[in-house]
Length: 240
Image 1 (spheres, rainbow, N blue to C red):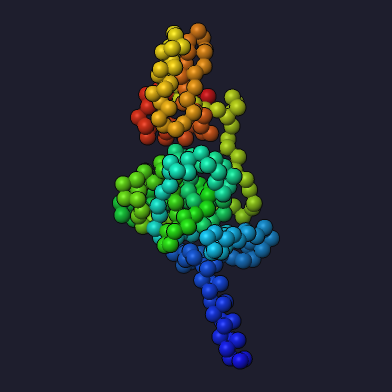
Image 2 (spheres, rainbow, N blue to C red; image 1 turned 90 degrees about the horizontal axis):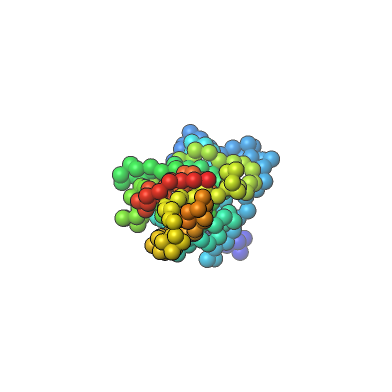
């Protein structure tokens, strides 16, 4: 009985370690220092679909390899694990173990295209995948046509503190928008506005200087507005 108990114990420990080490770092010369993070708050484990995941701190320069996918319309406008509203046109990603707000560079190993994103969500909870890119980020490295691809992830910036993301606000309540038209009559503005509702983004009319101006927004940053404008080939200009 003593030997049977020992074997069962070893098997349990082995399974627990395998679950914790889902991600294997490719950076052999950079090992995580437990001493370095000993005074920082621990990252809480969480359970999804009956499986436990163990977030951990990562080092700048640390790299990982695996398969990345992308997620878009079905999640657009819903809450992320970070408490933000998911924007498929923002440069973000979902990862199982990295601290929230970690900045990473993702390179598609099939075409060497790269994109820089911020981790603000958890997932993908699909076997053998280590990253879910937002639609616009996935499109930039070619995932919109292939669905998935092998990638290398490099940590560019991270934190060992418990933080909450706060978008940078402009002087006008943080509302950055794209002006797409200006009309003398509100009827013309309303017809034009309806044509842009297909983008699943807020579109509205404001009367400014005796004209009815049509806007798409709001965006949390100039970069987000610029990426949206470029992706959808929208003629107009970005205003705050």
